[in-house]
Length: 122
Image (tube, rainbow, N blue to C red; front, side):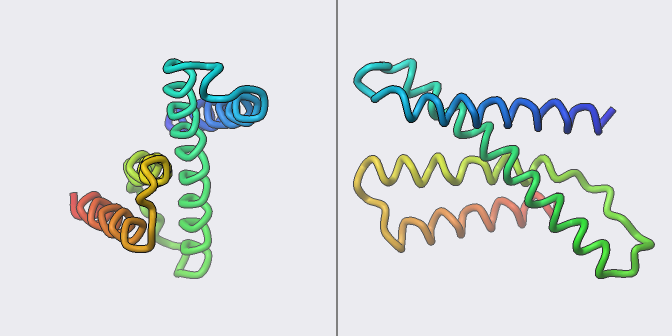
């Protein structure tokens, strides 16, 4: 069952990535209006969700390969991916306001680290 959900969300992420590339290359924010900008953010979120889950699952497999291989963590990676997919949205929002600098990015990364720490302690 879990594998089916993972494949479904991977498919959604791939489709949203393709639609996101098409949307960015064929339109401008003034042409698409408010709904188009909202669609851009939703597509960016789902694309980042799939990419972060893929990266985290790859890191888990590398960790499993380098460790004793006898104990595999059963903890789901989805909470980490769901919370991590908001980081590009926050950074894009900071960039659109013109306040993206080193300290803003560091603050976003530190908040993400705290969220991931709290997820791990759950």
